Image (cartoon, rainbow, N blue to C red; front, side, top):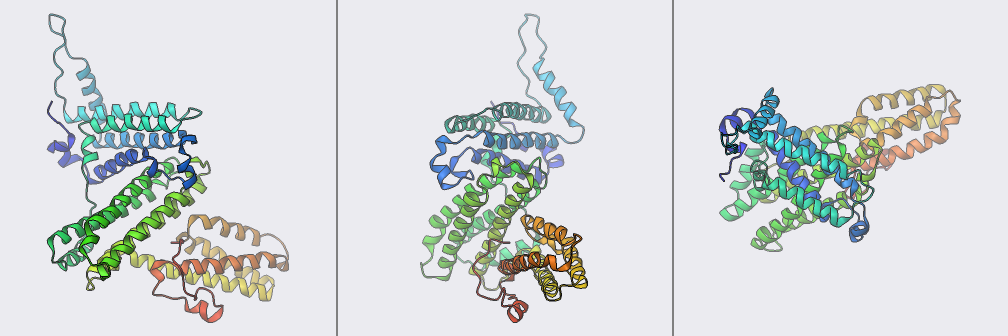
Length: 457
């Protein structure tokens, strides 16, 4: 039977199919595949060692969200107005005219629209089945793994979807990033090292693209848990990346060389940060019902991974070529630096207003503090982690009550401690490593001591 895929249909692919759709389909398909592997699930060490006792119903619900989204993406590939046409063609293929002897004529080979319609039908079928299974009271590990073999095996055998399991679409880079990476690769004389380094950069940029997709997915409460599929994919890709570095790159450099040391740091950072995300930040997220809490945990986790991949690209580029400014690889890196500097300055101004109220304890100082807090909430607060927003809202509501100024002193002291801690954490951001907080050192000693790596990015 000849292989026929929509990727080989030039009329449809060239004019209708966008790269983003294909990249996203590959991501979700591989995410579904990885999510049926125990090692790639966000579980604590205890849960992993006692997986035979765990209920995997919620994991099935996450997979169902991914499969349903794949069906939607495939429908989009048909283009505007093609849905009805594809359904009609599918109906025709199932109703082949019969000959005079009552036997069916051979099924004709369908068009690209028919092929896509079959894909949609298959994904919809799985979505319905997974939806029913996700309502079961208990689903043990072995049943979950068996379900995964059936779902993934069927999707891989599809001539249109299977190719996306086998292919590895490269992320699209902007012109500045391409030029910077070209300079890095030009500094490597060994052709085999150059090809391995290029493959390493591609994987790091692909990880960055995945984190962008995560941030888009978690914006809606109805799709937020679907992002767990991408986290599972990142864990699998990161494990492969570290193995690639250990087997293909590290043996080519002396252990004490700057390049060898840089690669060792890269492997250590990737393993530690991904482990932190999957075995700490995302543990039990699949069970959570509060969308705000789920969003806070996922935003934190995606921020850790985004910074990990950006810093890995920067560190790798600077390791191989001192002439390349790694930070130029990311246009938004300067934006993040500016945002972080503004955020820290605004937090400092808010701290000053709180301290002024604590010293004066009058209505004028209270109003100034409330106004500064309100301005911060409408401005720089958006550059903080979502999980901290509610605390600022709570303090603002509390300080706005009709009470005597002195009654707010205990709350003002708590707010002051919170702000000092927040300034210290923001100062640990990697983009601020070359911008120590001089104001904090001169006035209060906060944020000036040597910093350990921050989780707050």
